[in-house]
Length: 519
Image 1: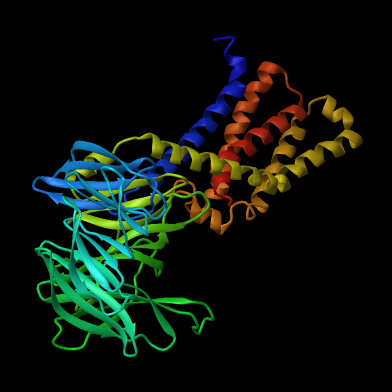
Image 2: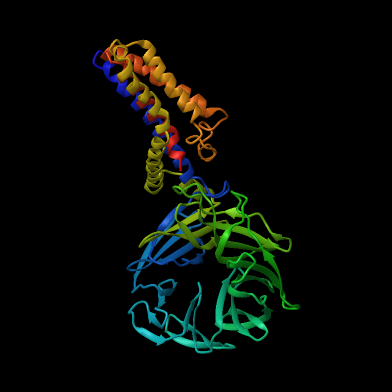
């Protein structure tokens, strides 16, 4: 015990500093692992993909299959209804930026944008102008004709002649069936033709027209079907707006093809910050009672990043006759989340964009997933640790700001050194107390540069309550003074050393507890 007491003068400050760092880490861990929404699970990693594309979802009798591209080919996970993995299969094919594929059972076709290939032998089947894989059918476009190809014998059958070689074909698959939408532009606007795909044939359901305003151009159109009603979501860009910047606009409408398509302009509000969501894209529609549900990515609020309060998250909203419902945040990760797809009602998969490899993540309202995702893992621990280390590096800016605190007592000692050196040599108590009072007076008077409104807004509640700057300045001063007096008795410190020690401990404590929130 006698050997330990002299070391307490260093051990005690280090223990308090350690507590401060652990509190900061815990706070960051809470923010990094915060669920996107109280009714949804935290993100649960399924795998890693090299492609920033929607994964392929196929429903089975007792679950789902999720397939995605990797460096060496395709990985397919099979899950039951509670997302317990029952099988994993690998398929080796060449992969590049343009690779897309069709996989059902073990029948595999893939395309490199220009041509279509067999998955088993990598033999080229034919050149194409576009590959359109669905969960239960493989379609391709060649010229102005749309074909279906049978993956069992690689024979093609003509489905329909398109209105133009420039036509784009979109697909939508629901519980009711599979649907196609051909879109092309003519003098009357953007023409939309809707078809049902059944038994390797297509039957036209109806058509609609959308004419954007003169200053807007169409970026993307998504659709879904429910009964004989089509729900359509259209995104446009206005290159010349009142603000002088490009603006994106979003329109939603439904039609039973008896009347013209009427659309309503939409806006989306961040459920966390209550500010408008920005850069909405990667939209997908799914049929829902009294309308449709929309999945999309957008820039919204998050506390998972270091030094930034926003990131691309995944959101979900109900669209109906009454307009836009309440927006729900589905993802809350530090990386860019993109390409969401609904696996089934209440479950969403998306891609978290990284470097060379991207994470495939799942969030669900399924209690099994909520329980599985609510665990410690290396990814979130490293995220919390990285954010903690980054915030601690900000503390050095706090040291610079606090120069205006400790320069005055040090200047006081320098003056005494030339004016009253004998008082320093005699270790007069009034010098110690005067130095401490000068330091604390400077800290309280010049506290605003460090304890700014922005810092207090960023700091947790236990550091930012009313009057907290003065309370912590004086509280840490009492702690530093108590430890300092203990050390002075055991080590026979001189007055200048005591003042320097007091200031050093006090500055260190303020730096560790408040410095991370300076920037």
